[in-house]
Amino acid sequence: MNNRKQRFSFCIILFMMAILGIGFAANTARAAASVEKWGRLSVKGANIVNQKGKKIQLKGVSTHGIAWFPQYVNQSCFKSFKKMGVNTIRIAFYSDPASGYTTELYGKIEEGVKHATDLGMYVILDWHILNDGNPKIHQKEALKFFTRFAKKYRKQKNILYEICNEPNGDVTWERDIRPYANKVINRIRKYDKKNIIIVGTPTWSQDVDVVAEKPLKQKNIAYSLHFYAATHQDWNQDKFRQAYRRGLPMLVTEFNICDASGNGRMDKGSADKWMKLLRKYKIGHVAWNISNKNETSALIKPNCKKTGGFSKGNLSPSGKWIAKWWKK
Ligand code: IDC
Image 1: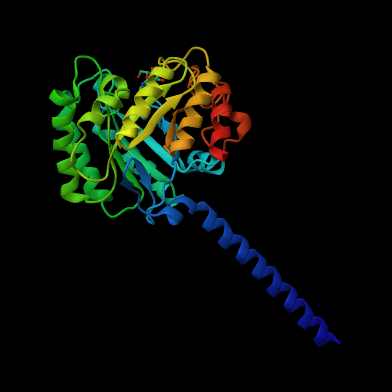
Image 2: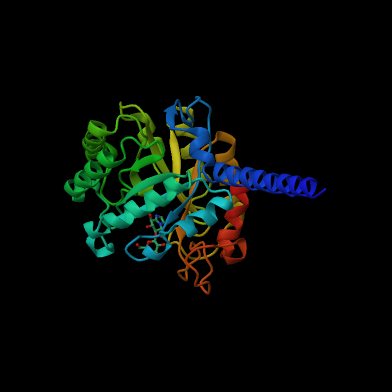
């Protein structure tokens, strides 16, 4: 009798351990879902595809400038976005010293890549030109930056390099961006032969139609298209359609539903059109920005002081609106 009881308890314990084990395995599998499932991405025609050649749609969030908001570069923060359906983290590293550029932040970038990698997420390393509108201004620093990180991450499947956020001002594709891109791409390819490289387009990454007339020759290159829905409307969507028709691979590495200042009113009507268009063509999108700054484009509410473990309730109105699209 006693023996029977003991055997029974032993079975119960085994059963509980099995349940725990399955739960744990499921959890870790879920935690690594996107990179594990899709593998290394590449460009095919006008789309980004997974390791099996199937079109996929990246859904991402971008940090704010990491010099200003380094506190959000942590695993708990990235994990909470992952739980909401995000599979990509963009790390925005401003290239202009007035916006915080310093090589001392390399460690922070590496930290961010590690957290995203541990979570099975893709990471975009963003060389964030903005006030320095011509990428040639800091070309030397860009070459150093991409040499370092292409050497370091060449074997990782989850890396994308974005080599010039938003060219603007007196800058043209032919004279400035194209020669810069050729130099930086050749440098990255010395080390990393495969991961996707994203190239910024003229006029704050809007003129994809111009680039589509004479794209670069290298493989696995995509081009950025940015939109802030209250400013960039139908005319910008026409540029997208024209470029897509010509076969230009694009990724929306930055967008929000407010105006181009990153603040101001939300235009949900325009944003809805954009999101439907991107879904239709399977074009990935990355929302600007992970911070609680008092501006419309900040995804976290200004009064939320946490730096991780976010739930939907911690999101700002723009964040909440965008989060619906991470689940679709
Ligand atoms: C904005 C930030 C804002 C910051 C400003 C200057 O939201 O807090 O003060 O940059 O650095 C972009 C840029 C991106 C901008 C964003 C909103 O890539 O850096 O961030 N935006 O203006 N292009 C279009 C809009």
